[in-house]
Amino acid sequence: MQDLTKRLTELKDDFLKVYEKLGISEKLGKVAELEKEVAEPEIWRDVKLATEKNQELARLNEEVQPWELLKTQIEDLEELLAMSDESLKSEFTEQISAMEGELLELKKALRFQGAYDAKNAIIRITSGAGGTEAMDWAGMLERMYLRFFEKKGFKASLIERVAGEEAGIKTAVYEVTGVNAYGFLKSEHGVHRLVRLSPFNANNLRQTSFALVEILPVIKADTEVLIDEKDLRIDVYHSGGHGGQSVNTTNSAVRITHLPTGTVVAIQNERSQLQNKEKAMEILRGKLVQMQLEQHASTISELRAGESAGWGQQIRNYVLQPYKLVKDTRTGFESTEPDKILDGEIDEFIEAYLENN
Image 1 (spheres, rainbow, N blue to C red):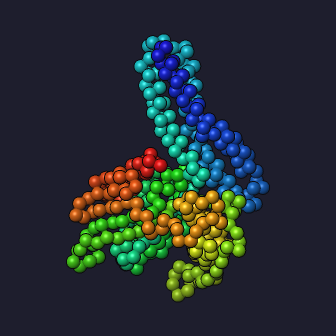
Image 2 (image 1 turned 180 degrees about the vertical axis):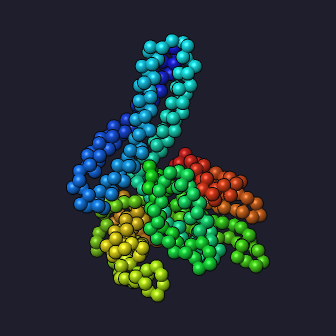
Image 3 (image 1 turned 90 degrees about the horizontal axis):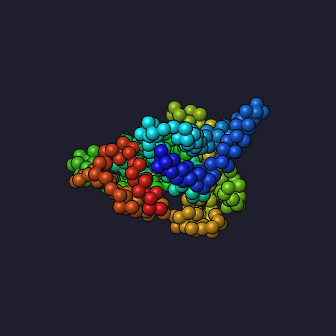
Protein backbone atom coordinates (compact mmCIF):
# COMPACT_ATOMS: atom_id res chain seq x y z
CA MET A 1 0.00 0.00 0.00
CA GLN A 2 3.09 2.23 0.14
CA ASP A 3 2.70 3.29 -3.49
CA LEU A 4 -0.90 4.40 -2.82
CA THR A 5 0.14 6.29 0.31
CA LYS A 6 2.80 8.13 -1.71
CA ARG A 7 0.30 8.90 -4.47
CA LEU A 8 -2.26 10.22 -1.98
CA THR A 9 0.39 12.39 -0.27
CA GLU A 10 1.33 13.94 -3.63
CA LEU A 11 -2.35 14.55 -4.36
CA LYS A 12 -2.82 16.21 -0.97
CA ASP A 13 0.25 18.45 -1.45
CA ASP A 14 -0.98 19.53 -4.88
CA PHE A 15 -4.47 20.13 -3.47
CA LEU A 16 -3.20 22.31 -0.61
CA LYS A 17 -1.06 24.46 -2.93
CA VAL A 18 -4.06 25.30 -5.12
CA TYR A 19 -6.36 25.62 -2.07
CA GLU A 20 -4.02 28.27 -0.69
CA LYS A 21 -3.47 30.03 -4.01
CA LEU A 22 -7.23 30.43 -4.52
CA GLY A 23 -7.68 31.73 -0.95
CA ILE A 24 -10.32 29.13 -0.07
CA SER A 25 -9.74 29.60 3.70
CA GLU A 26 -10.37 33.35 3.38
CA LYS A 27 -13.50 32.67 1.32
CA LEU A 28 -14.76 30.25 3.98
CA GLY A 29 -14.26 33.04 6.52
CA LYS A 30 -16.34 35.34 4.30
CA VAL A 31 -19.05 32.65 4.08
CA ALA A 32 -19.23 32.44 7.89
CA GLU A 33 -19.40 36.24 8.11
CA LEU A 34 -22.20 36.46 5.52
CA GLU A 35 -24.16 33.62 7.16
CA LYS A 36 -24.09 35.56 10.41
CA GLU A 37 -25.23 38.75 8.68
CA VAL A 38 -28.17 37.23 6.78
CA ALA A 39 -29.33 35.41 9.93
CA GLU A 40 -29.97 38.78 11.61
CA PRO A 41 -33.66 39.79 11.18
CA GLU A 42 -32.70 43.50 11.00
CA ILE A 43 -30.96 43.07 7.65
CA TRP A 44 -34.33 42.46 5.95
CA ARG A 45 -35.33 46.05 6.64
CA ASP A 46 -33.21 46.75 3.56
CA VAL A 47 -34.47 44.10 1.15
CA LYS A 48 -32.04 45.10 -1.62
CA LEU A 49 -29.01 44.78 0.68
CA ALA A 50 -30.27 41.48 2.13
CA THR A 51 -30.82 40.07 -1.38
CA GLU A 52 -27.32 41.09 -2.49
CA LYS A 53 -25.80 39.50 0.64
CA ASN A 54 -27.73 36.27 0.01
CA GLN A 55 -26.63 36.19 -3.63
CA GLU A 56 -22.99 36.71 -2.62
CA LEU A 57 -23.32 33.94 0.00
CA ALA A 58 -24.80 31.54 -2.58
CA ARG A 59 -22.00 32.35 -5.07
CA LEU A 60 -19.25 31.81 -2.49
CA ASN A 61 -20.80 28.57 -1.25
CA GLU A 62 -20.98 27.27 -4.80
CA GLU A 63 -17.28 28.08 -5.20
CA VAL A 64 -15.91 26.66 -1.92
CA GLN A 65 -18.09 23.59 -1.33
CA PRO A 66 -16.40 21.36 -3.96
CA TRP A 67 -13.01 22.19 -2.37
CA GLU A 68 -14.26 21.37 1.14
CA LEU A 69 -15.78 18.10 -0.08
CA LEU A 70 -12.53 17.00 -1.76
CA LYS A 71 -10.53 18.03 1.33
CA THR A 72 -12.73 15.82 3.52
CA GLN A 73 -12.45 12.90 1.07
CA ILE A 74 -8.63 13.13 1.03
CA GLU A 75 -8.43 13.25 4.84
CA ASP A 76 -10.86 10.33 5.23
CA LEU A 77 -8.93 8.22 2.75
CA GLU A 78 -5.66 9.00 4.55
CA GLU A 79 -7.10 7.50 7.74
CA LEU A 80 -8.49 4.44 5.96
CA LEU A 81 -5.20 3.76 4.16
CA ALA A 82 -3.33 3.81 7.45
CA MET A 83 -5.43 0.97 8.86
CA SER A 84 -6.20 -1.18 5.80
CA ASP A 85 -4.53 -4.13 4.05
CA GLU A 86 -3.88 -5.11 0.44
CA SER A 87 -7.39 -6.54 -0.03
CA LEU A 88 -8.78 -3.02 -0.54
CA LYS A 89 -5.99 -1.82 -2.84
CA SER A 90 -8.02 -1.80 -6.07
CA GLU A 91 -10.86 0.11 -4.40
CA PHE A 92 -8.46 2.73 -3.00
CA THR A 93 -6.71 3.03 -6.37
CA GLU A 94 -10.08 3.81 -7.97
CA GLN A 95 -10.90 6.42 -5.31
CA ILE A 96 -7.54 8.19 -5.67
CA SER A 97 -7.91 8.27 -9.48
CA ALA A 98 -11.36 9.85 -9.09
CA MET A 99 -9.96 12.46 -6.68
CA GLU A 100 -7.08 13.27 -9.06
CA GLY A 101 -9.65 13.85 -11.82
CA GLU A 102 -11.73 16.06 -9.52
CA LEU A 103 -8.67 18.14 -8.56
CA LEU A 104 -7.73 18.54 -12.22
CA GLU A 105 -11.23 19.93 -12.84
CA LEU A 106 -11.11 22.23 -9.80
CA LYS A 107 -7.67 23.54 -10.80
CA LYS A 108 -9.30 25.18 -13.82
CA ALA A 109 -10.36 27.90 -11.39
CA LEU A 110 -6.72 29.09 -11.48
CA ARG A 111 -7.45 30.52 -14.93
CA PHE A 112 -9.80 33.05 -13.34
CA GLN A 113 -7.33 35.30 -11.56
CA GLY A 114 -8.28 38.50 -13.41
CA ALA A 115 -9.55 41.44 -11.35
CA TYR A 116 -13.15 40.91 -12.52
CA ASP A 117 -13.24 37.20 -13.41
CA ALA A 118 -15.17 36.22 -10.26
CA LYS A 119 -17.90 38.78 -11.00
CA ASN A 120 -21.29 38.11 -12.48
CA ALA A 121 -21.67 39.31 -16.07
CA ILE A 122 -23.88 41.43 -18.28
CA ILE A 123 -24.38 40.07 -21.79
CA ARG A 124 -25.71 42.48 -24.40
CA ILE A 125 -26.55 41.22 -27.89
CA THR A 126 -27.14 43.80 -30.64
CA SER A 127 -28.11 43.13 -34.25
CA GLY A 128 -25.96 44.69 -36.95
CA ALA A 129 -26.96 46.42 -40.17
CA GLY A 130 -29.11 44.31 -42.44
CA GLY A 131 -32.63 44.51 -41.08
CA THR A 132 -34.54 41.27 -40.50
CA GLU A 133 -31.57 39.05 -41.41
CA ALA A 134 -29.37 40.62 -38.73
CA MET A 135 -32.17 40.65 -36.15
CA ASP A 136 -32.84 36.96 -36.75
CA TRP A 137 -29.11 36.23 -36.30
CA ALA A 138 -29.05 38.19 -33.02
CA GLY A 139 -32.06 36.12 -31.90
CA MET A 140 -30.20 32.91 -32.78
CA LEU A 141 -27.26 34.04 -30.64
CA GLU A 142 -29.62 34.92 -27.78
CA ARG A 143 -31.01 31.38 -27.88
CA MET A 144 -27.49 29.89 -28.07
CA TYR A 145 -26.36 31.71 -24.94
CA LEU A 146 -29.54 31.00 -22.99
CA ARG A 147 -29.11 27.28 -23.75
CA PHE A 148 -25.45 27.49 -22.69
CA PHE A 149 -26.36 29.20 -19.39
CA GLU A 150 -28.95 26.51 -18.72
CA LYS A 151 -26.43 23.70 -19.31
CA LYS A 152 -23.75 25.51 -17.27
CA GLY A 153 -26.06 26.12 -14.32
CA PHE A 154 -25.82 29.90 -14.71
CA LYS A 155 -28.91 32.01 -13.99
CA ALA A 156 -29.84 34.60 -16.64
CA SER A 157 -32.11 37.49 -15.61
CA LEU A 158 -33.58 39.63 -18.39
CA ILE A 159 -32.80 43.35 -18.06
CA GLU A 160 -34.06 44.59 -21.42
CA ARG A 161 -35.21 43.10 -24.72
CA VAL A 162 -36.33 44.79 -27.94
CA ALA A 163 -37.82 42.32 -30.42
CA GLY A 164 -37.40 42.67 -34.19
CA GLU A 165 -40.45 43.62 -36.27
CA GLU A 166 -40.48 40.35 -38.24
CA ALA A 167 -38.01 38.05 -36.46
CA GLY A 168 -35.30 37.90 -33.84
CA ILE A 169 -34.21 40.84 -31.72
CA LYS A 170 -32.77 44.31 -32.11
CA THR A 171 -31.11 44.02 -28.73
CA ALA A 172 -31.27 41.90 -25.57
CA VAL A 173 -29.54 42.46 -22.23
CA TYR A 174 -29.23 39.83 -19.47
CA GLU A 175 -27.47 39.68 -16.13
CA VAL A 176 -25.73 36.30 -15.75
CA THR A 177 -25.13 34.90 -12.27
CA GLY A 178 -22.74 32.04 -11.52
CA VAL A 179 -19.24 31.17 -10.31
CA ASN A 180 -16.68 33.07 -12.44
CA ALA A 181 -19.45 34.11 -14.85
CA TYR A 182 -17.47 37.02 -16.31
CA GLY A 183 -14.30 34.91 -16.43
CA PHE A 184 -16.07 32.27 -18.51
CA LEU A 185 -17.98 34.62 -20.79
CA LYS A 186 -15.37 37.29 -21.57
CA SER A 187 -14.21 35.15 -24.53
CA GLU A 188 -17.54 35.90 -26.26
CA HIS A 189 -17.02 39.68 -26.40
CA GLY A 190 -16.90 40.88 -30.01
CA VAL A 191 -18.58 40.61 -33.40
CA HIS A 192 -20.12 37.29 -34.50
CA ARG A 193 -20.59 36.73 -38.26
CA LEU A 194 -23.10 34.37 -39.89
CA VAL A 195 -23.08 33.13 -43.51
CA ARG A 196 -26.17 31.19 -44.68
CA LEU A 197 -28.85 30.89 -47.35
CA SER A 198 -31.40 33.55 -46.48
CA PRO A 199 -34.79 32.28 -45.20
CA PHE A 200 -36.16 35.82 -45.74
CA ASN A 201 -35.15 36.19 -49.37
CA ALA A 202 -37.37 34.90 -52.16
CA ASN A 203 -34.31 34.01 -54.25
CA ASN A 204 -32.77 32.11 -51.29
CA LEU A 205 -29.47 33.96 -51.79
CA ARG A 206 -26.45 33.56 -49.55
CA GLN A 207 -26.46 36.25 -46.88
CA THR A 208 -23.87 37.52 -44.38
CA SER A 209 -25.13 38.91 -41.08
CA PHE A 210 -23.42 40.44 -38.06
CA ALA A 211 -24.26 40.78 -34.38
CA LEU A 212 -22.30 42.38 -31.55
CA VAL A 213 -21.98 40.53 -28.25
CA GLU A 214 -20.79 42.63 -25.31
CA ILE A 215 -19.68 40.93 -22.09
CA LEU A 216 -19.34 43.27 -19.12
CA PRO A 217 -18.48 42.60 -15.48
CA VAL A 218 -21.27 43.42 -13.01
CA ILE A 219 -19.94 46.17 -10.74
CA LYS A 220 -22.56 47.30 -8.25
CA ALA A 221 -20.45 49.42 -5.90
CA ASP A 222 -19.42 52.99 -6.79
CA THR A 223 -16.20 52.45 -4.84
CA GLU A 224 -14.94 49.78 -7.29
CA VAL A 225 -15.06 52.07 -10.33
CA LEU A 226 -14.68 55.78 -9.71
CA ILE A 227 -16.64 57.88 -12.22
CA ASP A 228 -16.59 61.65 -11.88
CA GLU A 229 -20.18 62.98 -11.64
CA LYS A 230 -19.30 65.95 -13.88
CA ASP A 231 -18.46 63.45 -16.66
CA LEU A 232 -22.07 62.19 -16.73
CA ARG A 233 -25.16 63.53 -18.47
CA ILE A 234 -28.38 61.95 -17.21
CA ASP A 235 -31.56 62.28 -19.29
CA VAL A 236 -35.02 61.13 -18.25
CA TYR A 237 -37.66 60.34 -20.87
CA HIS A 238 -40.94 58.49 -21.43
CA SER A 239 -40.91 54.77 -20.78
CA GLY A 240 -43.55 52.90 -22.76
CA GLY A 241 -45.32 50.23 -20.73
CA HIS A 242 -46.65 46.92 -22.04
CA GLY A 243 -50.06 46.91 -23.69
CA GLY A 244 -49.76 49.70 -26.25
CA GLN A 245 -51.57 53.06 -26.42
CA SER A 246 -49.19 54.49 -23.80
CA VAL A 247 -50.41 52.11 -21.10
CA ASN A 248 -48.27 52.63 -17.98
CA THR A 249 -46.22 55.28 -19.78
CA THR A 250 -44.12 57.19 -17.26
CA ASN A 251 -41.08 59.46 -17.13
CA SER A 252 -39.00 56.64 -15.68
CA ALA A 253 -36.64 55.71 -18.52
CA VAL A 254 -33.06 56.84 -17.97
CA ARG A 255 -30.25 57.51 -20.44
CA ILE A 256 -26.75 58.07 -19.03
CA THR A 257 -23.95 59.43 -21.23
CA HIS A 258 -20.31 59.28 -20.17
CA LEU A 259 -19.16 62.46 -21.88
CA PRO A 260 -15.38 61.80 -22.17
CA THR A 261 -15.88 58.52 -24.03
CA GLY A 262 -19.31 59.08 -25.56
CA THR A 263 -20.54 55.84 -23.98
CA VAL A 264 -24.35 55.75 -23.68
CA VAL A 265 -26.51 53.40 -21.61
CA ALA A 266 -30.31 53.63 -21.66
CA ILE A 267 -32.63 51.53 -19.47
CA GLN A 268 -36.41 51.65 -19.28
CA ASN A 269 -37.52 48.20 -18.13
CA GLU A 270 -37.32 48.69 -14.35
CA ARG A 271 -40.35 49.91 -12.41
CA SER A 272 -38.98 53.23 -11.24
CA GLN A 273 -36.64 55.96 -12.40
CA LEU A 274 -34.30 55.19 -9.47
CA GLN A 275 -34.14 51.47 -10.41
CA ASN A 276 -33.49 52.33 -14.05
CA LYS A 277 -30.72 54.74 -13.02
CA GLU A 278 -29.08 52.13 -10.75
CA LYS A 279 -29.18 49.47 -13.50
CA ALA A 280 -27.88 51.94 -16.11
CA MET A 281 -24.98 52.92 -13.81
CA GLU A 282 -24.18 49.25 -13.19
CA ILE A 283 -23.97 48.62 -16.95
CA LEU A 284 -22.02 51.84 -17.53
CA ARG A 285 -19.39 50.78 -14.96
CA GLY A 286 -19.07 47.45 -16.76
CA LYS A 287 -18.72 49.14 -20.16
CA LEU A 288 -16.03 51.50 -18.91
CA VAL A 289 -14.12 48.65 -17.24
CA GLN A 290 -14.30 46.66 -20.50
CA MET A 291 -12.92 49.70 -22.35
CA GLN A 292 -10.21 50.04 -19.71
CA LEU A 293 -9.14 46.43 -20.30
CA GLU A 294 -9.15 46.90 -24.09
CA GLN A 295 -7.18 50.17 -23.97
CA HIS A 296 -4.81 48.98 -21.18
CA ALA A 297 -5.67 52.16 -19.27
CA SER A 298 -4.83 52.30 -15.56
CA THR A 299 -7.83 54.51 -14.69
CA ILE A 300 -11.22 55.45 -16.14
CA SER A 301 -10.02 59.05 -16.61
CA GLU A 302 -7.41 57.80 -19.12
CA LEU A 303 -10.01 56.28 -21.45
CA ARG A 304 -10.13 57.62 -24.99
CA ALA A 305 -13.31 57.95 -27.04
CA GLY A 306 -13.76 55.77 -30.09
CA GLU A 307 -10.96 53.31 -29.28
CA SER A 308 -13.03 50.40 -27.97
CA ALA A 309 -13.20 47.19 -30.02
CA GLY A 310 -16.94 47.58 -30.64
CA TRP A 311 -17.95 46.54 -34.14
CA GLY A 312 -14.33 46.35 -35.27
CA GLN A 313 -13.32 43.06 -33.71
CA GLN A 314 -14.78 40.04 -35.50
CA ILE A 315 -14.15 37.06 -33.23
CA ARG A 316 -16.08 34.15 -34.72
CA ASN A 317 -17.49 33.02 -38.05
CA TYR A 318 -20.51 30.72 -38.30
CA VAL A 319 -20.81 29.34 -41.83
CA LEU A 320 -23.94 27.27 -42.64
CA GLN A 321 -23.63 27.49 -46.45
CA PRO A 322 -21.96 26.39 -48.78
CA TYR A 323 -20.31 24.23 -46.07
CA LYS A 324 -20.70 23.89 -42.29
CA LEU A 325 -17.99 25.44 -40.09
CA VAL A 326 -17.70 27.56 -36.97
CA LYS A 327 -14.23 29.08 -36.53
CA ASP A 328 -12.80 31.39 -33.88
CA THR A 329 -10.55 33.99 -35.50
CA ARG A 330 -8.40 34.45 -32.34
CA THR A 331 -7.60 30.86 -31.36
CA GLY A 332 -8.11 29.07 -34.69
CA PHE A 333 -10.38 26.57 -32.90
CA GLU A 334 -13.11 25.27 -35.19
CA SER A 335 -16.07 22.90 -35.33
CA THR A 336 -17.88 21.37 -38.30
CA GLU A 337 -21.08 21.02 -36.24
CA PRO A 338 -22.67 24.49 -36.18
CA ASP A 339 -26.06 23.06 -35.15
CA LYS A 340 -24.55 21.82 -31.88
CA ILE A 341 -22.78 25.14 -31.32
CA LEU A 342 -25.97 27.13 -31.94
CA ASP A 343 -27.72 24.84 -29.47
CA GLY A 344 -25.44 26.13 -26.71
CA GLU A 345 -22.47 23.74 -26.85
CA ILE A 346 -19.80 26.45 -26.90
CA ASP A 347 -17.64 25.07 -24.05
CA GLU A 348 -14.79 24.02 -26.35
CA PHE A 349 -14.53 27.52 -27.86
CA ILE A 350 -14.40 29.05 -24.38
CA GLU A 351 -11.81 26.48 -23.20
CA ALA A 352 -9.61 27.18 -26.24
CA TYR A 353 -9.74 30.91 -25.50
CA LEU A 354 -8.92 30.43 -21.79
CA GLU A 355 -5.95 28.19 -22.64
CA ASN A 356 -4.57 30.83 -25.01
CA ASN A 357 -5.01 33.85 -22.72
